[in-house]
Image 1 (cartoon, one colour):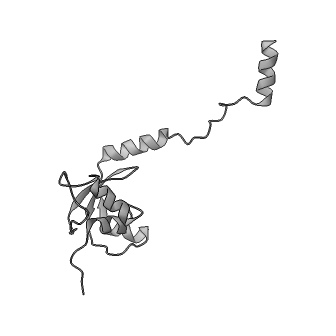
Image 2 (cartoon, rainbow, N blue to C red):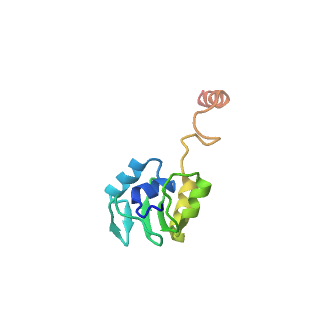
Image 3 (cartoon, rainbow, N blue to C red):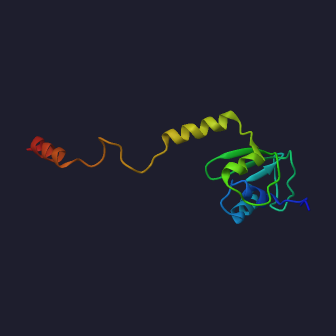
Length: 126
């Protein structure tokens, strides 16, 4: 028996664009998922050949459905059910952001002075 309808939120969760199905549904409700430039509901049926623009926390994806996936599977299998057709300029922006991303750790040779630096400063000030 083949299932004929697959909800958009379930599909986005199954191909691992979102950690939970409720996050996928919330993204649809907040207008972060578009089909032909229009916001769509989480209950919309997905069909092979559809192209969606999905905005996640880190990336703006443009994906084309190549197969229907009804259950969540591991990443290596999930990537066979969609094709990433994200524009090159978006990929370049992500690489640039990754290169300039601040980890919160201080860079070497910056930040608080060491004990030796403090002694040198005290000696200089006297």
